[in-house]
Each structure stands twice: as structure tokens, then as C-alpha cells.
Length: 227
Image (cartoon, rainbow, N blue to C red):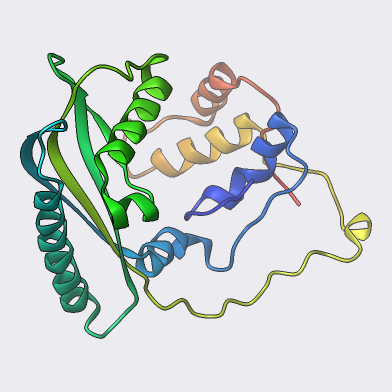
């Protein structure tokens, strides 16, 4: 279990114990962990263009200019966002369906298919995707392309992080449950702060504080954390 956030590590061991998780990892500066991950994430742009093409009569050469246009746009945005040259990769895909269907599925091109863009390769990839999604495919049915997609990813430089070493002798560390003051003591202190004798005639008396505290008491102790 990885515990992060401002209060995540406070109750991480309790949750881990309930779930029977044996190891809890708390990163350095857990309160900034999410923001840190966002700053280190790679840049990504997703593009889609509507393009209706019957696969049996499609001019496959018309696909490549559409892909290149989106890729070039993505590369320009990567440069503007990063402020410097970074490694950029592009992944092609198409939304396809059998002729007569309403809904389509997204077919991601492999590197080989992106290079060749053959009708047979695209149809085979679509059939495989359709079977994976719906449990069947129709190899003899005509298919059509409804849109083309391009995902452009820019790899941001990553700093070298310091490895968090595990405790070599965890058995020597103290384990246990730290108990907070009883509910009565905590609520009594609260009422004493709220009702100060002499400042307001409507303030509660000591007997009232004790009675209210006793009525609100549900448990004798409250486990806060383990260490």
C-alpha cells in the first residue's frame, strides 16, 4: 500500500491492518506526492478527425496525410509546452465498424501496421478488436472507417530519485496502538472551553458538563495510529 496526501499516512497502518496488507510505503513529502507526479508526467495530446471510408474501396493513401497532419500538430504543441526539444512519439488508430452498424470500436495500429497500412492488415486488426470486445467477429463482412486518431506523447526528463531504504531491523521497532484520551475527557474539555463561568450567565455548570459528557460518551478510548 502506498500512502500519500496530507493525512493519508496517519491512518495508513490502520487500513493496511484491516486489509491485511503487510507493507506500507510512505514516500518523501507525501503531501506533495500527487503534485509531484503531475509535474513529472509525460505530455500527451489526443487528436481525432472524422473520415468516412469504406475499407473495400478506401484509398489507403488518404489515411497517411490525415495521420501526419495530426502528428505534426502534436509535435508543435509538445515543443511549445515543454519549452525545449524532447523525445516525441506518435500512435495511430482508427474507429471502425461493420457496414450497417451504428457503434464503432477503436483499433490501435501496431508499428508494422502504421508503416504498411494495408487493407488486409487493418481489417484483421479490426476483427481481432471486435472479437475481444464483443466475443465474435465477421471476417467476411465489409467494414468501414469512421474516424482516424493520433496520440502524440512527449517524454519529459525525469530526475533521479533517492531510493527509500527499508528498515534493516523492523522487529526492533515498537509496535502498538496509541490511545487518545477518553471521550468523556475530550468532550468535557470541549465544553469547558465553550462554557466559561462568569462570562455568561447561560454558561453550563460543572455538573451539566459532566452529564453532557457522560451522555455523549460512546467508547472509553479511541485508537489513533500505530507506529
